[in-house]
Length: 189
Image (cartoon, rainbow, N blue to C red; front, top):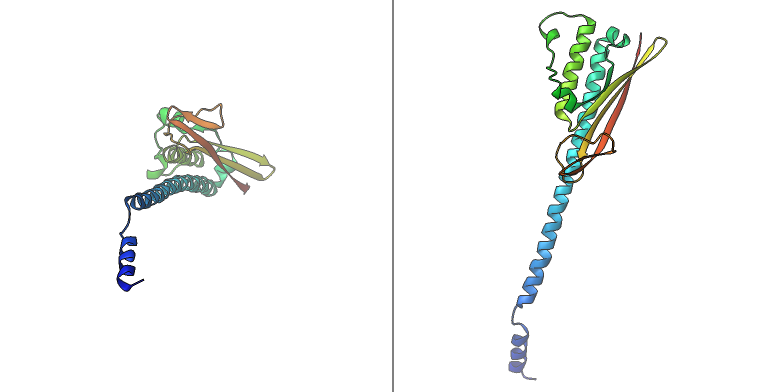
């Protein structure tokens, strides 16, 4: 084989990329980009769920610290709340109390003020929120159990009212999963 024949055969083999190779490459790149976008969307949903959990922990600690600061009223049961939902609290026209901000007040009034501000914070920061604060007295020991619940969007959903009869909050746009955080604080009188 001569040198010229060899070059001619090599040129015929190296004609460049065919249209099929270019389309296959574009398909592979497109699928990789779609996968990356899906992973990013999933990550953002999980990040939102983590934020709700952090807020619930912060709100429970906030109420526990308010109880600690007003220990006589806490020991007397001034911070007990029956099970309440954020929608019911906000619909009830409960304005945030500021009675103890400008002047002196009693321990019971401070407890009422603390609960008003705390409930408003829970109702406005967590979607489809619910809460309760229970007290158990055992001699000189008083234990409060703070339970905060919310509905996290695991699928395509909006923050509408939860279905109380089901472990899954539901609405017309999809479903969400109910989560709760429980904290306890013990006081010695």
